[in-house]
Length: 84
Image 1 (cartoon, rainbow, N blue to C red):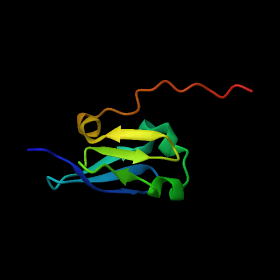
Image 2 (image 1 turned 135 degrees about the vertical axis):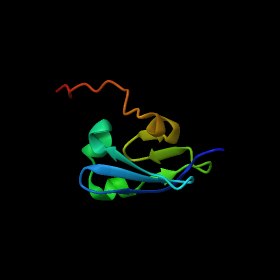
Image 3 (image 1 turned 45 degrees about the vertical axis):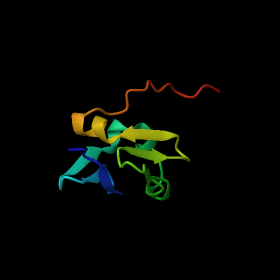
């Protein structure tokens, strides 16, 4: 069986992903710094891929796989402070 994302929503600290198998995942925004620091309007701009296996935010340059969320993986990129 292939599990995919149906909907994505947010509260102050959590991204909620409803899955095709009936589960809903609550993922801490702290796992994804781009989403954590984004505005509510920017977060709403999530595009679920045609297959439902990926979440994408064009303006934030953020891509998240449903497989990774199910496995409990957060952002694995290293974030460095801004250099003047």
